[in-house]
Image (cartoon, rainbow, N blue to C red; front, side, top):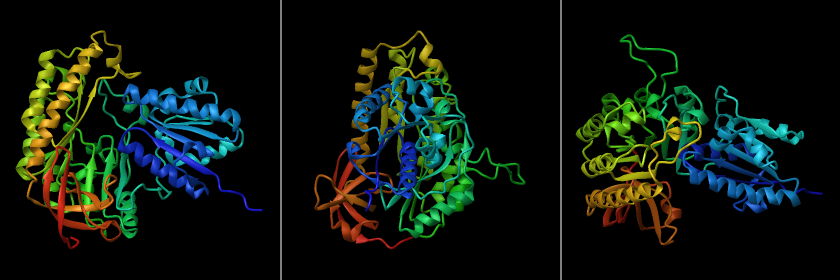
Length: 452
């Protein structure tokens, strides 16, 4: 008699790091013989990979979890897992809140999923949130794309921004070796992937925990050195990296990006606030003047580079004048994309305990005003593409129009144009831009690009 393979479902909340973690955990589950299902209600193993950076993301997790916990009352063989940052933050408390849970695991334990599930199968309710040295990737991730891929290069964060829960939940910085990173990228190249995004919570800190320095006294493992080391991996045509911290974003790195042809002209450098007093209260370690100098240097080396960033409004104590300094910075720099959020107090962070919290209605008003400006500036930035020839890597089909394919320019602008996905997927095409919108473009294909 044949047995039906067990099925699993993963829902991912939050950042690219979480998405990369989910892909690795999916790879482990498939290696264990489980099959993916898009419907959590059909799954035998349900895993929520969680984010705690915003309050509303956390509430959504509990809502999803509650539904599956009820299901477990009639289907006791259901295995229920909560992973990621909420799991790390709440730990044992989650078992008291949702006793139906089988496994609570922090982000550092993603590569231990099989071992932890074996403990669950023995009848244990498992909490894995203790700090550990990162277990090197040994499983092939089940990647959501077969054109672009994320590769983790550094886990954790040593910064102590007063609003941010990440260091508490993702642990201290741990860099992978350049050899391990290159090996993973070589495998991706062999499998036909064309673009790799190197990932780190604070990617500019890459390598400072690895041993070794140059004769000149410079640390020999920096992000700049890593980009040079992996640049010639066969098959990989594009390189990106995220997320950068202005405190460590150097001219040496900018110069290398300008000189290495595979590195795309797109930089994600969060500034969070345009006011120096707020930046100091956030413990960000730079001023708005330094941030502007970084952007000016990027544009000196690469005048057409796309710049994206993150900003927070309504941080404790933020006055109207201080908020207007953020608007001024956004207006003057002109970002291609800006991720915005109203400040959300997070457990275990200093700013959550301060008494000078900004009222919710004021935060909502500021967020709306900032978002309006973001749209205006993004439309202005998009305007420069009209009529231009751009290179687009085809990643998929336009979900709204099956006759069109979609991909991104080197500057990370989403672009749609007529074409057959079966013929064009994974190919880099030259296109002429015929229509511009604030955050995307429409174009017509001109010719296939020859690989670099």
